[in-house]
Length: 459
Image 1 (spheres, helix red, strand yellow):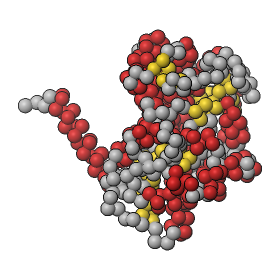
Image 2: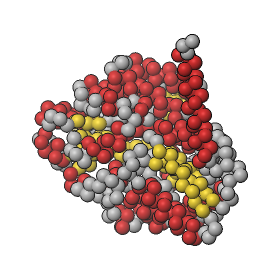
Image 3: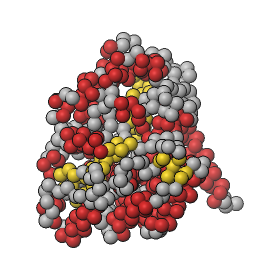
Image 4: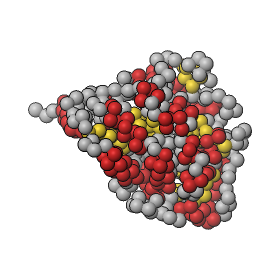
């Protein structure tokens, strides 16, 4: 008898679940793990030539094992795009059989994982670690739960802006010192590139569910937080502790995304909805002069450093940097978003004490500074941020560090991951043309109600 669609799906799902469980169990620490081995899980780039994190951790492993005779470090990479990494990581954290001793945790997910009891509070460790006083308060806050406890040690932050090709701009007759004052000026530059430089994608704005948090943060929030007067959070009302329904700023932000794709100013929709498109932007489009403007993050140069596989030493001469303007040029005139990652210890870790000793090795001033530069990150240790060697280590560091004064942080409360997905779905709807801006906004409101248990307010 021919199997039904339902039975085929069930069989496939069962096989995939079994395979995933087996692979996760193989890389977990386990309750009976070696007490002298610390297992460190991290996000590995999907681009085989990008080994920034691998190289850094291999060096820390050598330092740690030399300083702690008899102790071993096992590196457990998870090779996946961001959205898949988060899913795989949460699967690992659920059981002592699969939980590593140390995990690389995005700040946007940390409160959700705290609520799920996946992470261990670090306050007792931090109270005895003198270097903790060196970390800036905003970075500490990003790793703090609603219960006031700290669940991660940040390894840097980031900011976002507009990268542009000077060669493409020259061909389009646009200025090499371009600094748009409004959204319309950004779109007008993209339209000029489309008209005068055929074969080049005028602008990239990450969008849709496949792009995950890149769509929400590099794309939508860089728009949304530039609407209004900038005096309040447009996503979350801290006074009422409720999420804000789609208002005019939300719809205007969706309209910007709609314009990019409706006027074919951005990449082909099929490319934009490829989960690995960010790798192509950094590894091909920008270095090859095939992209005019990229709304993206401060970390891009890590892909172009020596040993990266995409070496591009000329990038600082061939690319320009501009701040993303507010919608109408209203004060403060510029906008940025900041996030970052932390090192966290799972609640079910077998060797938490050893894991924190590994964190301390990673976060010496020298090692932290080495990581900030290699990762093109923004320093969260004051002693590094004030070191001229850090400021002068790489072009662009001063520009992106300067954006910290106008940056915003996501309301990374427990419901945020679901809210983020709702944003991505709204973006995807207007990107494909399946939804109007108004329909996408209504869909967001419905998803927001469900994601937050009805804890919403009107704009």
